Length: 456
Image 1 (cartoon, helix red, strand yellow):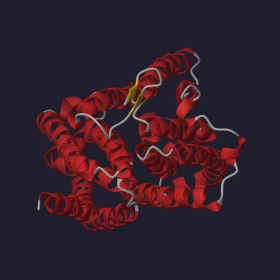
Image 2: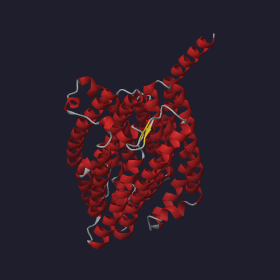
Image 3: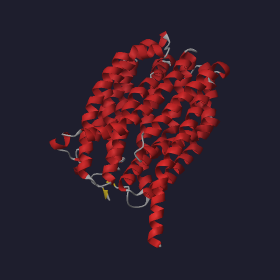
Image 4: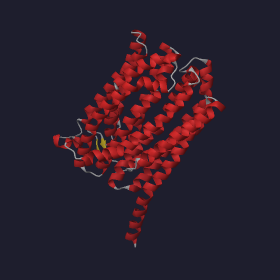
């Protein structure tokens, strides 16, 4: 079933490849636009305010990942259950879960905003943020975290839309918000001379725009239209949402802690290291984006089919999403190996920072296939209702990342940051491959036994 008016897609019927690709492309355009406007945002900051401002904004990346990543994990966890209810055609359960998600989102936005604003200065000191950067980091951070509710609401509303097979509305939302963000960035920084806080304000306003677009679409979907009685949930609804959402949220936060420790070691070597690492992370996020998008498609596709009990379709979906990841690895990983310097100089001017970054890029370019596959397999595991082993893979990721950076940075310098990434990706991938097989193989075996019994 595909409801074109409401843009709801049923992944449990029809051709898996066609469904996934039609869902994937708008989703890829959405995430690519997000990356592009983040890129241009950083470019405007770097060119308009200088390398130190660029490093300050980049230095905030791991802190944002810690807080926003937690909310994103919760949103994805809620979305998996909503997709499973949709796949099972249980409309009443679906509406109760949507109502519970709304209630929990409001509470999450309030709590995370208060925590992030209160602990921002202490967190920056733990990261060994250079005194030269501290002022701009605080200005940027206070504005961004002050607008955290907009980011959380967008993550949750877009997660619900993806769970229902709608990848087009988030695309429209990001197209509009990207335009708003870039216009306001330019106006605030070059026109009003506001500094980094202007860039943060532009981002928050853009996120409000994207949230309003998604909420407007959700209000039009009859399938999830809730009434007062749907908000009077028993503890079983909240327990199910938290049981699936908390491990996914913790996985992101645990991964963020590992990234923060790496940032701590990098910052202790000075501003050149911080600047180089900020630029490298921007490219990693950009070049991992298609595989991460394939992972999001895998999550929605798997969740619906798992809820419908159509386990054989999950295996077919895995092949399609891994194929997407491999193609993007060949194309984008090659750029990191062949032309690292032109890529880096797009952001920064300092020769020492550029030189450092050029030692990082080729290493990650060769091995980025590991994290590309990780996105797909891990989202498949989570879509089948197992958030716990992916969470433990996040713990392993953190441990390997910290062990590698702490042992190697004094021996091989900035390249240690790249090696730490590769070690973390590899360990997490192995755990999730095991988890995927453990979850799906018994289901497929039962289908095979039933088919054989009918033949006999």
